[in-house]
Amino acid sequence: MDSPAHFELQIRFTRIDRQKDSVLLTDFDYQVNPNNYFYPASTVKFPIAVLALEKLNTSDTLSLDTHFYIEGDTLETTFANEITKIFAVSDNDANNRLVEFLGQDAINEGLRSKNIGPVRIAHRLSVPNSDDVTTKPLIIYLNDSTTTTLDITTNRPLTRLSLNGITKGLGYYEGDSLMNEPFDFSLKNYYPIEAQHGVIKRIIFPEIYPENQRFKLAAQQREFLLHAMQQVPRDAGYNLEDYYDSYGKFFMYGDSKSPIPAHIKIYNKVGYAYGTLTDCAYIKDEKNNVEFLLTATILVNQDGVFNDNAYEYDEIGIPFLTALGNELFKIEQKRN
Image (cartoon, rainbow, N blue to C red; front, side, top):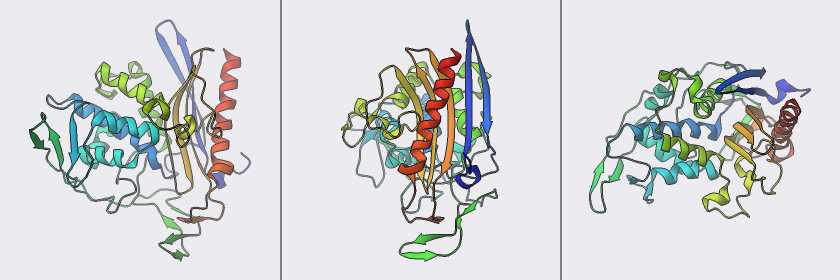
């Protein structure tokens, strides 16, 4: 906390007050500035999953349980399976399949139409040609023997972002070669704290927004989404040794592999890459009647070199986010 610029720290905390049927949300910010760029990593999977649900809701023929595969892919799956994997273990391939389903332009416009921004989802994650503007066809099973192909979309070409900190560090690796110049993030995804917080608020508290700023989800879809967001990997069938409870939950429990108590529900999406750790969460203690919203990001790259896999995730980043969640929890617990 004594070197916030070095760690590019941004925090938004929302206090929740309930009175009868009304909810009052009060935001508190620390260094939140949408003009100060950080790499959002896997946090972009949250709005992509929500918008995929919304698109399913507009279809007479598609549902969460519809079977499909991407042309050229070897996996036949369902939309429910892919969204579950996104939240349980932050599966990159699952996210990319939903990007093919939606297209970048529809993702960005879907968020902007609900007054969520600024935002720019530009690319898939961890695949070659991740920023290809043309989506791949989805082969949809209408029944056991009949398939149809969804149309591909061609999206607008990328433009470079112009933001504070859009180039970072002293150098980066390209293959085995060290390039002695800052790393350029200008063609990467852009999903700042304000936008992330706007998405989770609309999912947890849709009633506080006008109809045209809410996600158009059926009650069953929202229930499925909330369940996927809060379940731990073992609840989704993953082995506990590799995918411990806090695998995708940094606040309060991130630095421990012990089980998270059953009365603590954390509805969230984390992201970490290029030395940047981010978590966007709604935290609820059902036993002690404590609840709050928290989104925070921190950069831990002491040597200033990107793509060298030398980041202080375990030494600084995750312990800090864990402590931040715990301190705010204590404050809210005392207030109650």
